[in-house]
Image (cartoon, rainbow, N blue to C red; front, side):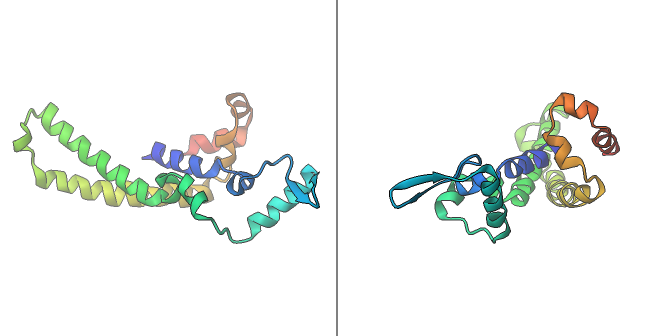
Length: 163
């Protein structure tokens, strides 16, 4: 569950404002009267802040390049958690309890499906995405650091141990 949340968030968080609008962060070129001018990195950063402040209006082409998990992380998490929990129960019934496929207890599996959907897919997603951001503010920054930088970051290490 936690790994799936981290993957979904990392996919979403890995896109900078420049990648979302399809431009390079170092140089934004624009054509004016058959001449091409290059804005400085400072101008580009100011422009990105202005673009990021506006409500994003994504086109159909931009939206189609995103994966389903990027567009709908909560729904994706519900599906993964539900399928994973159901598959785990079926595996236990078939492998550990040595039941045949037609002997699988569907009522028991249904209980696991509800548990996977409600608790693992819903509650834990809310807890780890919404509440962990408030409780552990260094988490997002800490996740992007290299291993060497993580070992030097004591505030991030303390938050990671608390989690």
